[in-house]
Image (cartoon, rainbow over all chains, first blue to last red; front, top):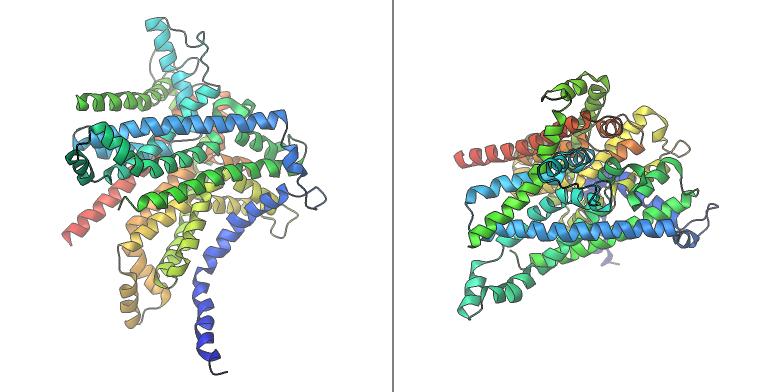
Length: 292
Length: 260
């Protein structure tokens, strides 16, 4: 067995070096992976502990279906609007011929605004568009426009959409400005030399290159709003029927009357945000090939 | 023409962001009838629960930052130096907190570490504080790891390590006196971002029943009119300060590098 020796040597060295990341692996297992596994496994367990798909079928009630539907609608709409408005603002700064001084404050502000989520954000919008808010009163006294009579209510689906845009748009700006910077001037010139109009350049060169990062950012924004609890809870309280709020109430007081249905509800969230983020990661690596 | 549309876009966008900030500021000053006053702020600062919850969250943020630095800096260093093949796995793990919603993670904590489990962390106040700190470290992990790893990319880890080792330095000395000072800017950026995330965090603290600043703000929001916008102004100022400090340390380090 003379050949066994050189094979065994690198194998024996390997574990010693892997020991260096043991603390990290332990942390990730204890506080990230095992807790998540507990939920995933629990979603497929009966109260007695045997494997079952019953919890998945039990999710199919009118109330839970409508919660998922509202959550998905909310996330798709805020992600779409966040992407378009963020793209427009980023494009205005990068291609609009605006003074260079604007860029750095815009990026800083986007960093602040994308982190200004949760409870205080809800307060800011109540003070602005709520029944006694700044804009509501101003429209009423100056123009005689009564938002409430027109059917607008901040504590509703569309109120939530407007509020979420406050952190969705800046996140888009932060991610898309580097991508727009990556579009090389040579590409535009090459297209122009070949006789392309501005619209043709965008449709046939720039957008196809940007497409993966646009779609990827969309997925990130989707997951970002799908998992958000605090803003919605502070704005509307426990009554709005979206998945994170429902799960919050379930964890606090088992409102569904079945702990394993709670696991299933949470598993549905992981499945949806997981899908959105895997899309994001895959598309991102694909787009980075072009934007070096 | 193009500049006109660019300005218009920026102006409309800016309006959308400035109005809520103006709204909360104006509302927070309206507590006294007819005149602007700082009464709402005075009321907030008089409330002992404000100071109790605020200092609680600040303490937890500090613990999270210390723990995060101790966890992330050696790991990122070791992966760059000895385990480049582990990079994709580690990076994937650090991105997981963006995939799994915080509410699901804390749900797992509550079920995994309840009083009848092997590690009954939720059984005592201290245990729950530790659990909450670990939860915050998880939330901050994507940002902290990215910041430190980017910082490590700019220095020659292998050469610095060999030089230190040939002068007789042990692993602790290398990490504490060679690596950490070299990635200090990255570590500080990660720390301020962690502070911004932790200080007003609601979901985890509320579900673990700890007296943090986020749940306090929510409680006040449900019961009062003028204090909540005052709190929002304070929270916005803190977020702004954190981001400003990140810019400041980054800019200072660039100056230093340019001079050296």
